[in-house]
Length: 200
Image 1 (spheres, rainbow, N blue to C red):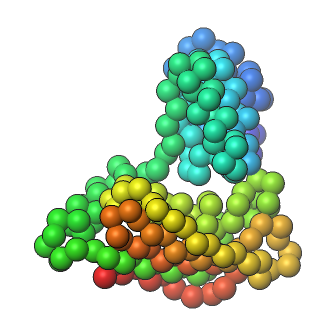
Image 2: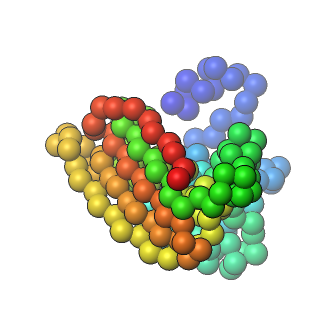
């Protein structure tokens, strides 16, 4: 992949490892856009090098890895941010403002279901990715947290329909919020179907 990138963008500096990039004094900040299972070690190395970090969603593969990143950010007094892009997308921002404006009443339930092919092979590798709920639906429940507030409880179920992958490929969750809202989300990268969004 590095060779293809270097060929496509000949004026761009290409490094053979994260360490060689982080050693460069003229690097002001780092965007971590590697497979999810590599987020924590690469981001931790960048924070230790005192490089501000924008890490792609999800923050890391496990809660422990997320805590490690927060600790490293505090330890090295270096900025760490997760790239939850819908918080900056004008379409989603307008939707969130309208849904919570009272013009449609009080939103009680957000339902979202998605079924279809996953984005790529590493997403279905348990060591590198986490399947649709971690690497896909994270967009939706982050956005719901942003507009509805702090979650109170989460009930989740996951199954693996495709025996050829190591990560779960079909998941559902019910998220209840302290303010009384609820989100139902179901994603599958094994079943075939369509996208459904509605707010009640």
